[in-house]
Length: 112
Length: 112
Image (cartoon, rainbow over all chains, first blue to last red; front, side):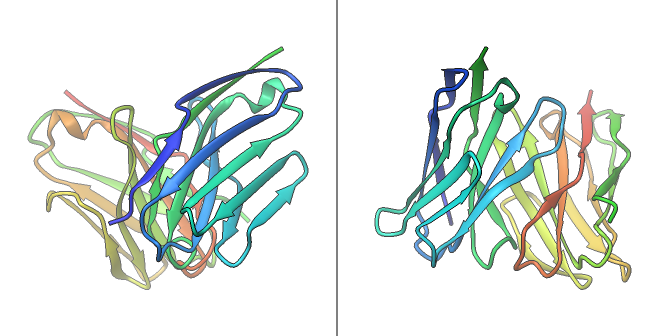
């Protein structure tokens, strides 16, 4: 089955700096890669996703890149703000969501 | 549209008991997936239902089961509870299963 590894497990940055979280996946058939943000005590919320026919996608301060050959994808957050502090999960799946395999999560702390 | 809802939000059970959790998807969504979230194992896929049929299943024992009703509401059942079943159980809905998944707030199950 699919295996998703996520690094780093914790990340501390100063407000205004950029943050990068990286994930690798094992199943070359995976074609959908969402990123979720989970604040303490709350549900995971989708922040951005990318499908395998696209190499990069951007939404304001958030961008995701995908390298299908190397089977890795990354989340980039620019100009970080304290409210970006949360746990971020990457995931991989087929057919855009039937069954997602999640990475272990990254706890991002943005220091004011 | 109203978001995904889950009931109850909190449950305390003892070992050996069984429990039923409920999930109401976003109106019009026909796919419901269930995930278990624990600090040690992270987010793990349990199963997915689409049009009242189980379409995908994760690597969980047969004590974990589910069903979906004609109105797309879904229930999951855990029989013969074990201490290790303590977790946050999240459901997620999508329109067809080939689309973005939206999570509910989860049911926090504690097994004593």
